[in-house]
Image (cartoon, rainbow, N blue to C red):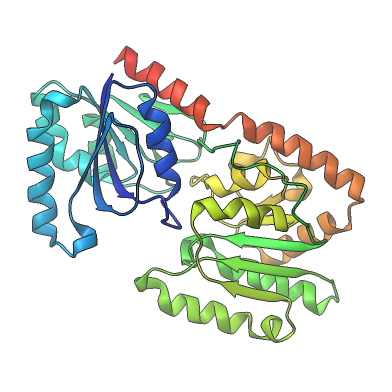
Length: 345
């Protein structure tokens, strides 16, 4: 197998996309040759059968330069790959799809998002196979789509009993952006505080430039809790640092809408956190008492209060069950299923 991967970023220290470094490492075990084209490149360490090319975002290149380099790379490297795997950014299929078809390359696309448009439909036509992790993803509607494991490293994400875990401690991890519905989380904590519930909460993550105003609004919304020491905003951290955070907290909250099955949900489960979420993909995984209505802060507050009131023995039982489920989404299972599909193209 000779594989071309097109992705947004290759950087093992990136707080959002650092996990993809592990994907490339795992994929390389199944390939003779892996060629990676990334919009931006940072720190990486791969085996000899992986070659990485950057479109130049880290150096401030223009969009015209990105496009020019993209075509240069997919053409000059055409003899070094048979299958194309585009990760998340459908624009690359729109740009390269016709050329790849003309030169006989198989095109696959990983897209895991609740929304889409007519361009997504064009991408579906150009692609030989589409992958996502949720039946609520926009791309799940296509016949050529296959639901896949989320792809986490359960050897890295696991319960570490040497790390102290504080009772009633709650973690929120991700970009501080409207899509993450951070305001729902903070409003729920404000409700709990007014009801006299004892808890501590940590928010880890930064905002992209376009969402800086949203970050300020979230900070303002949490001002009272911050003064009381019940919530602390932290900056972003690399993916390799997050196992410690999961291990330090008893609960993990994810308020992202259904269709985007955040890998943080599975990472938290793998580390023994009890997950409280609104994602409908978890309906048959989490008890109803752990699932809150999307966008409903009062319901989230009620669910958090219920979970925190559980006996320790009951919490431990749930932690073990969630870990067992998370293991089904290990990166090795994802790679096996992906490459089984590639072999049939």
